[in-house]
Length: 547
Image (cartoon, rainbow, N blue to C red; front, side, top):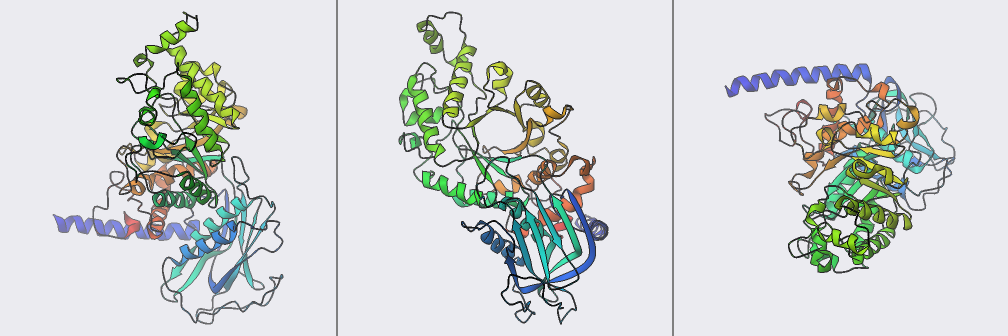
């Protein structure tokens, strides 16, 4: 039986590899996510042993080193840990502002040699935030004077995407022991379909070390996701330092499972250098049991630890202090204030609060609304727009601030109602984009369309994008990446690539996604096989591309 299974696996592997080779010859390249526009030829270029970055005619000064460091990271990735042949010809280029010199070939393979890449960026600005221009143009020539790939971008963050795309065009040749680029000449124009392309991580249910969060950020940049939604605190733990209220992180699991405010700043900086915004979330008024370990007066009673006591002014002072400290670190346009799963029935003190206000017509649900709206006003006073989970809209959508973005998670059809009401929306419906739902295959992630049943052009603009959510109840360092990938990549292409270029049948992209999954593995990201049950490992021996 094992022999038969192995024989079937071998046959499948040969077939899969054959089809992949045909696909590459027909379609050119295994780029993920697929760019907006691609044209390509059939020539192979060798990369010079001193392949270089130039910035001729660029207005961007790179004072923070974002571009140069991205180029160095790219070169490290395309080498993939291999040692390049030391006597491979270099470009022979002397320092000059001009790039047009002499034609030359690799003496060993007679391949044209690509000397470097020139990146021209129009804007000198290097501040990352929501809605920044992420478009880029990439051209790789195959004839003429000394060959330089050319990138044009409005911002450095578009240039980062161009470098990622370029890295996926390159591979190590094990015969020549050099780097090569196929399908030249190649022209790509690219820009994202949605401005918000997110991934949520949860550091309350299980602590994630800073190095692990950085690894997640790296993997996000490979698929051009641009928002790390950091669900920092919840009922289970409060791991982050809040200088204004230093006892709050007494709610951490332990003294070693914490983030200093400097850690948070480092994570934000690391993400920004890779074109990733960090969205901080404090979920109020529910999901706050851990807050009371530092300040017990936040608990309504010994037997009731959440939601936060709407009758306690100190609760709002705490929120104000948290957001005051967050604003110094989390520079993103938005802050997430949660607002989901609030069970006010556990809080009869609210009725007493309303009685003291001499308004006997108020109910427990009024207390929920009062808290959410007041927390929104605090966030707005600190310069934030607000994101709230969809229950706030479902219960009192007409009262929400116009600065609200409604975060859909309970199911489909909510986005349509939100944008019809004139509010912005982010889509994360749990039946398709919750990564902790291990029974949801990558095909469902790929097919989930944020604009379903939204036809009005103005309303479509109110859908900012979407987010896949990696809730942490059963996730820690040991399994987070293989639970995220490759399913998150399926959603990433949905959010990046123009709708008209997305196939209706996800099976049409299976080979390309398999290639991207192998690329993630090559880069040290533990992406699980496409086949099988989510984060399970491979079932049989074989090539990465066949699993």
